[in-house]
Image 1: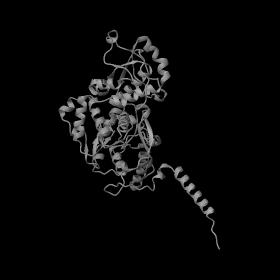
Image 2: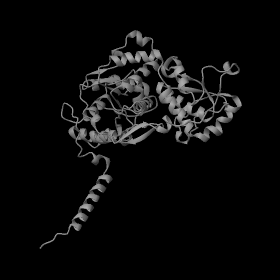
Image 3: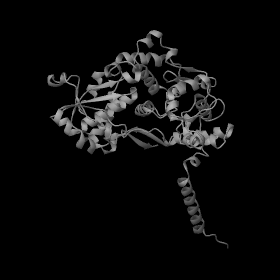
Image 4: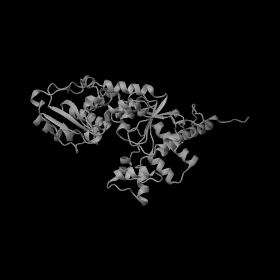
Length: 441
């Protein structure tokens, strides 16, 4: 009789399976999706970006939401006022950092000062945009907040401490705390690049609580925002499109094919920031430094198989250039002015208008940003906090690299699709703060 040995057969099978698993695990992200089939297709028969199965999501860290915080010390080291500058979301970022610093230094927080005159050419304070009582109540146990100073400080301006070079815990303890102990009432503006990872957990928890639980819009602003949200056709995508003259001028990028009016507006705001030329211009653009034009934005959305009849809310300020390049492709586009009256606009501060865009964007069905600014980071974080994961940042770098390689038409669409598909699946680009943790699905 002829016998067959089963042991070598199973050994070969085991080796084959092991090699297959190793190849799968070591494959680059793009190849992991090459054979994936998805259940959702749009009207053209393609998969749209939101139906891609996510591998990683960002969610609020459990240590912050469920942590047991140490009790606040009985005695405070003094009072700190956070002076916030710039647009609404930049000031919000400064305030969040200031809360963390106040807790770090065992200080009592005074309601912040919003320095908006230079940015919006108007005056509006913290209470015009945010609910003060809600902020104070939500910060209970994290840091003490007061509406009014005691009589001995009420008529005085705080001693200002320069924090432009302060980055982490020891910088503040060694350089700012002595001024707080000496003057008892100081003002600070946190540095733009904070090393929050160096904070003790109780200070980081105070920062997280301030940013994502305590800052609620003032009732009058929230009511108007709800009216606006209700009026927008559903479902809808909120698009934060940035292509204003000052932004383009600041980027030092050159663009071909812009209208004479756009070129004139850019030159009027350029100042001494001349655009890069020749080989340097190409290097600069391929680094992702150049804002996407509205037409380039439309091309990328098409590559992501987002239907051209999608309802789109344009979250943008005044002065957006070359918008026809977008609306000629995506025709169902609305803005604040589509629903608000002239009386609404005349009675609103610039911060209030920005707050409306923010509110609509965190509550939209999906959110896409062409830039990576303060609003985009804050919206992405709040959407993750609320469990809304359909958030995507368009890759300026990828678009520049592919177009410089000469990719066009179908080839360009496929390359853009693969890049953004992998970014979305892996949760890349969200740049969420230390308040959020990566969850593998």
